[in-house]
Length: 360
Image (tube, rainbow, N blue to C red; front, top):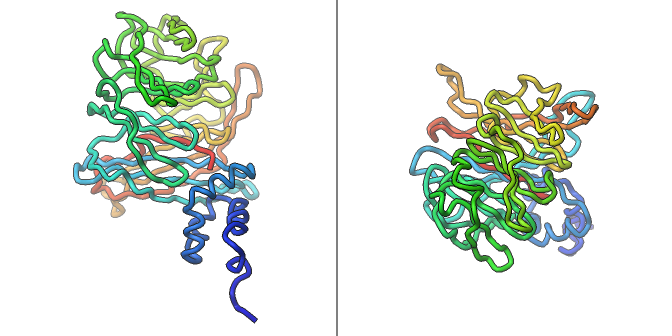
């Protein structure tokens, strides 16, 4: 009798169907079995098969950058075990995979990321003017060039509405707002809210929260932009720009966090930010917040103590289940919490810069 494992004796097409039913967090271990398994797991076709079978799961893509000029950006994927708890205990099952970065010697991380299907668009520099656009294909984890913006930008914000990417800020006010038509891959300049809107740190939201409108906070007021007719409207006479940082949308509710890491949600009827109950003081120093398959994911970094022998920066992640109990109350429960990546202090002030969640 042959000692060859039963699965290995099957044709590639059938093994691919089996792998499509296996949770993604188990892929790193499967890829170690043999080169054939590694090749099948690395193939873009597996993504298509999972999509067709309806077995895709959220996968978090994130970037870590160092202040050292001789170290480039590094991208990773994080997949968490679907069943996180057992008898109330938080488990640590996950997989982290390093992604080869684009071969150019980039010295500044990209500020904004926009997901278009399986593509991740990297737009604008962080503290450095950048006009090139780069695209990461999450199916094959390969890079390609996108169309350059009409102007170089630093610290802009971008959002996808329909088949277009809208980009704001990070340059002279005359070129403050432009849009990329994804189908034609061409950029077009658009009008700003006006000369008095004030330039500051802008934050973006998923347009689903405002019926296809873009929500923008400036240093003076908060606005919405209507792509259908190109008009701006003031929705708040006082700015929320300094109150909150990164943001995301889940089930038409916008979520963000304050300077102390307290996570909040936006009451669109009352036009006020409310704190999520049950999470007070749990996540100090939050840097990123994302929609992870209908649940919140927050990320932050923790530097070692001054005299500690362990000189690694620890990257933390938590997944939070949300529950709306009353019209003005949303409660959160931590489902998954772990430090999943350690980076030497020699890299500098390392922490997660950008992240996106993609069904894979």
